[in-house]
Image (cartoon, rainbow, N blue to C red):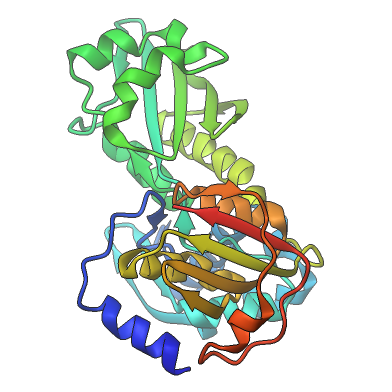
Length: 341
C-alpha cells in the first residue's frame, strides 16, 4: 500500500492535533487488592484482574462468565506481559494484542481505547456542608482511582470560586446541565457527569446525571465509603457508555465512509480512531478520504462524534476515482456515510 505508507510517513513529521476523545493509557493495567502474596491469593487476584479488564472492555458484567472465556479465566497469566505486588495490591499488565485477539476469537464485542473524556462535577454533602471535588484536592485521587479501575478518562474542575458557586446541588440535580455549561467550556470535554453524593447513617449514596451529545443518562448508587461509592458510580457510567461504542456480534455491516476537510494531522487521528473497526483506506482526493469499515452506522457515528466530525448528506462514491488511486480496493457498497471536519 504505497499511498498509505507515504501518508503515514509524512504524519510523523507533523504534530498531531489534540483529539477530543481520550486514548486511555493504562487500559490494560489492572490493580486488585490482596491479603497476602501467597500463590492461592495471587491466583484469586489474577482472576479478578481478568474479570475487571473484561468488564472495562465490554461494559457487560456477565461477559467474563462467558463459557467461551472459561479457559482464559482459569489461567489468565497466558495474557499477561508482567505483574508484581505494590503495597497491598497485585498490579497486572495484560498484553493488549493478546487480550483483544483472544476475546474476539471468543466472540466478545470490545470497546477500544478511544473513549469520551468525562468532566465530573462531584459534590460531597455531609453534616459539615457541601464540597465540590477539585483537581488539586486529596479527594480527587479517589475519583481518579475509580475512573481508572473502570476504564474511563476523567477530567476534574479546578473548583475555583466561580465553579463552586455554579455547582450547587440544584444545578447538579437538574434535567439539563444549563447551570454548568458556562463553567464547563474551558475543559473541552466530550461528556458531563454531575454527581450529588450524600453521607447518611454511615453510608454514602449518590444520584448522577451524564450528558453526552443530545442524550442524558441518570442513575443512583450506594457505597460504604467514598471509594466504594466512586467505584459504583464509575461502573454504572461504563455500563451506560459501552453500548454506544461496542460493536455487538452480528450488528456490523460493510460501510463506505467519506471524510472531508482532512490534513495529515487529522489523517493520523482518524486512522487511530477507526483502527478497531478494521478500516481500509480506499481513496485520497485532496482533503477527502474514503474508507471501507466494518461497523454499524450507529457505532460509526458515535466514534466520529468523539472527533467533533459533522455528518453531511450521503454522497455516492465515484468508482472511477477509487480505481485511479494506488490503493487496490473493492467497489463501494451503497451504504455511504459522509462527514467533515
